[in-house]
Image (cartoon, rainbow, N blue to C red; front, side, top):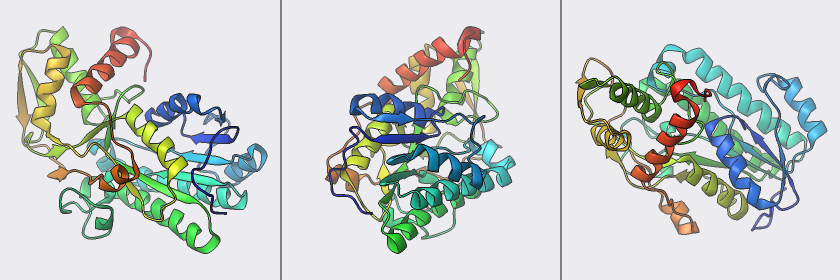
Length: 321
């Protein structure tokens, strides 16, 4: 079932699983230039956690290629307080889709993981070979275990059945269609909400969880979508491939950048009673760069676009994400 490279998407039926999420929406936008037939199905018509439903839908739809971006996601608080959902939902979704992709002879599948798959204290920047080299970060180990299993599922189906199933491991993402919910958001949307609210109410300070010292790498979601289409067309590796910028900032530096973008002139108060998470998470992106792809959107530029989307769609009683 392995395909010759480059793998053309033109004229093919391409299923974006998870099309309403931030990553799925970005993939949909990027696929518009590929002259392919994009397949989507809403959750009300297909519960990806139900194997029989997935198998029936895929047998009828017959996709040629799949971007597996469907997942239950959230920040530290959501991961730490809903561990059963994070491991069960993600395990069952990926298992159902990957198995049905094999039984329906899908030509190519790209599975989306997360940089949290790497050990909490992995050498920085993290190379692909660091996987399973040490204990995971406890606050998101449930999600990480599910994503590691997805990588191994793809590798197993490659080895046993010759399926052209590959995996991408993006760093922390942000951009249009992000989730703006203080109880479930990742750091950038949560911080944008807090800083915007402080600006609107003329508050003097904003509370930030943790010390502000951990370092994180952030990738604008449209850059990720471009990388995924590049990988679908040009790679067929058993190893997962890191997708990021290769540059990180401290949480404090991120807060200051968001303050500039939003126009907030107050101070940040760091609540050191709250968890920091992993001390550093920077991906080594040498493998993908060697194949010919690099990120194009700088952090401040991307944050400006993300904030504008928030203003247009979420703030002031606009649409929800």
